[in-house]
Length: 107
Image 1 (cartoon, rainbow, N blue to C red):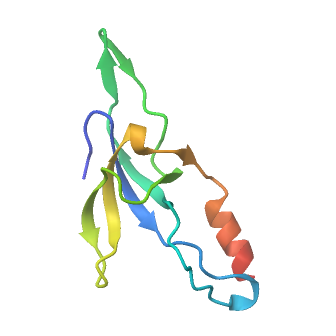
Image 2: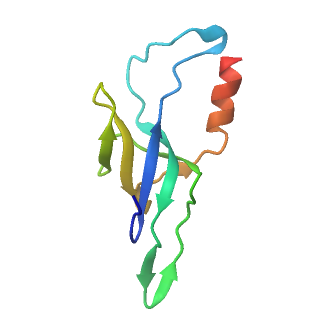
């Protein structure tokens, strides 16, 4: 899928639920945000004839709100979204250390 304008196609990453020693933590309340890996990015939007470049690139790990206006395009067997289409203003932050932190927690 190739998004247009200010849209971003994201693979939803699983929430970190495992602590050191492999103990699975039951989350009492789901976090307000999700992490995702950017799979594709639109060209951006134009204002007064000038293209405004997107702040994210393919491969970035981003943080975005759970729920919101994001459109899920694929689901797993349990009904959880695995791929989503977001607008650029729905991205809260980049988190390049997210995957490294997850690997460190497993060790």
